[in-house]
Amino acid sequence: MSIAKKFNDWRKYRETISELGRMTDRELGDLGIGRADIRRVARTAVGF
Image 1: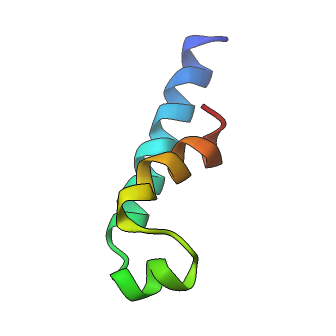
Image 2 (image 1 turned 30 degrees about the vertical axis):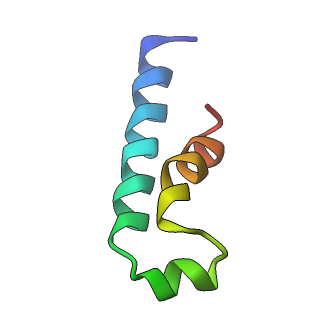
């Protein structure tokens, strides 16, 4: 895997965490995500 691909994956991971972190607990609940699950969901979304 190239360094550029790794960097882009990391950036998408951080953006996903940031976006989900800005959501309220109710909004996360509507998506079926708990606040403690944000990092796992971000890893899955990026493909880590």
